[in-house]
Length: 165
Image (cartoon, rainbow, N blue to C red; front, side, top):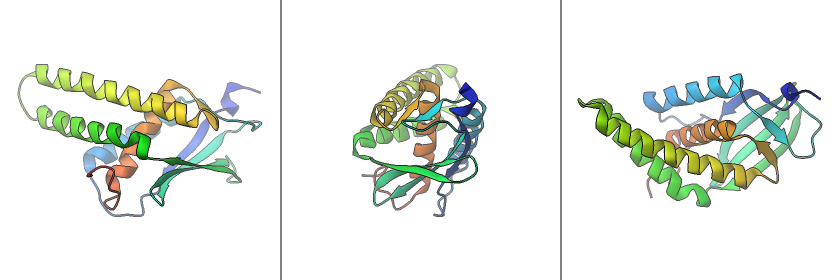
């Protein structure tokens, strides 16, 4: 079994709702490109992929649907978003501060905000790895990119209250 068999070959987000933010869409597109270029994704107890992943929210939970590359469904995992609530709120606030700082002169504030953003991003990625550890093995970079996609999904979902409550 080669490492290429334990990877994602496709990723999709449920974007059936209408809210669009060009900044979030850009982050989403970059995360997908980076994720598909390099990732480690190993569903526990499965013989190998590559795999396709669809991410959506269902009844206030995060749903990760894993399929074989040919589309045959393997498993769906549902995660509570409650453990992510604080991190997602903090990440949303710091991203807004970052975007605001980008329009102002002087790199010092931007650098400090970016360091904070990376710290929250790393913490959220580690929490995602922990929450998925009994279901899917992923490396740190894959977890970071998946968190970016989760953030993009939640930011686009205007009905989801985790970002505003």
